Image (cartoon, rainbow, N blue to C red):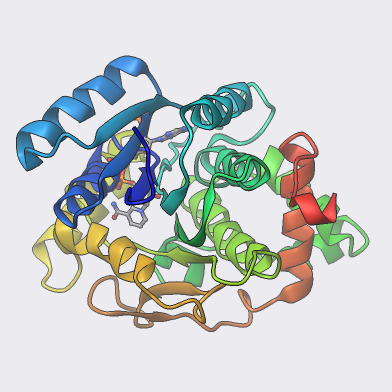
Length: 323
Ligand SMILES: NC(=O)c1ccc[n+]([C@@H]2O[C@H](COP(=O)([O-])OP(=O)(O)OC[C@H]3O[C@@H](n4cnc5c(N)ncnc54)[C@H](OP(=O)(O)O)[C@@H]3O)[C@@H](O)[C@H]2O)c1
């Protein structure tokens, strides 16, 4: 039963790592309805059981959604409309770290960007269209320090240079090649991940321009949080050298509550804070978060191009006012 006193959150990728932790923290923070999404009903049910056991709060509602298949995102939005109620905090947390092999989804999208951005874009657009976003809602999407370009081995794409070299300066064409990972775009696990998170930061900046007053969106890096399952598909060096090394060096990693706490912190910011990307201080992977300012990221033309391509790749579903 959803009523006016309900405080509702929706967390994607809630069956593991940061999503599971965030869901627990939200329930502990007094949210009365926490919608947890996972890729299969069995994973969602398993998460619900473990969250119930941990929090003793009977507030978790499951939903199936797989960003690798946009038809499941459409179905999830339709299902939410049937259930009713508005979402106050939307945590777009799902995401994967790719391996060496290029993976593409049934929608012909590279799987990393599909998991962290394209499905989340479609979900957000549908929730807005269906009137399911609360008047003072907070949207938080999972970013990463990797997007800054100062994390060893992670190099986000310079789309302006890529567009100039291969597409006569057409930035949208360059971004689409990267999102679909079609030549001359080249898959490299770390760089594909860093670029996907750069796109996430751009998406938040662009969406913020259109949201109604009172509703905010920010990209937030949870920081280096090795006690998740994120490295499961990662290449050997990342999985067996970098991540274990980060765990050993003081300041290079933090706990699950610290990582998930960053999403919750940003969801508590006022309505004057929107369209930003928050991460650790430059060259840091943990500690307090601050707004990131970098030429590569503060690029309004690229942000708009990314938005247009994301809309196209999501089947032409963009911001209602712009369609
Ligand atoms: N851990 C870190 O150090 C760190 C640092 C910066 C950013 N992040 C970001 O934090 C987020 C959470 O990652 P994590 O570290 O908690 O990893 P995790 O334990 O592997 O959790 C990732 C979650 O996302 C889900 N997911 C993956 N691909 C999906 C897709 N295509 N559609 C729907 N759900 C999908 C996973 O579902 P399955 O279990 O079904 O695969 C899982 O629930 C990611 O966006 C990640 O990039 C993590």
